[in-house]
Image (cartoon, rainbow, N blue to C red):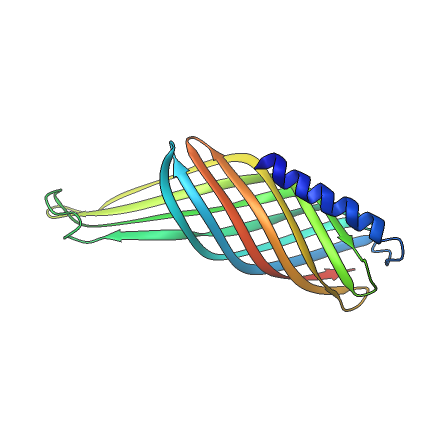
Length: 203
C-alpha cells in the first residue's frame, strides 16, 4: 500500500505540473484546514478488529515556490468507543466495561497546488506521519471500585493525499481531499482513509 499511494501522489503531481504552464504563481505562505470523516480498518497481531469511522479534522501551514512547497500540520483521526453491559460480561466478575481507542499525529511533507484551468485546481501531498494512538479502558466490577487503564503508543509512518476544487482568487480556495494515513507498529496495523472539505488561504 505504501508504494501504491506514493506512486499515485507522484503520478498526479507529474500530470498536474504539465498542465500548470498557464497557471498562477502561488509563491508564498499558505494555511489550510479541513473537516470530514476518517474510515479505517484495523488489525492487532494479525487479529481483525474490523472497520469503523469517525469525525476527523486537519490543519496545515507551509510555503510554496510557484506550485510546489513544504507543509507541516496536525490531524485528528477521531476514535471509537465500545461498551459492554452486565449481560455481555456474565460470569466474569464485572458488571460493565468501556473502552476508547483514538489516534492523531503531526505531518511533515511536500505539497503541490496545480491549475489545469484558471479556477480549477488539483492538489497532491505526502510525507512523514508522526502518529500517536491512545487507549483508555474503565472496568466496573460487581464488587469494588472502578478500574482504569490507559496507554499510548507512537511512531512514524507516512501519509499521502490528492484533492481538487476551485480557486476563487489568488488568495482563497475551497475543495475536497482524500488522504491516507498509515499506522503500523507494535502489532497495530491501521489504514486511515480520510475524506474532508478543505479551505485554503494564501498570503
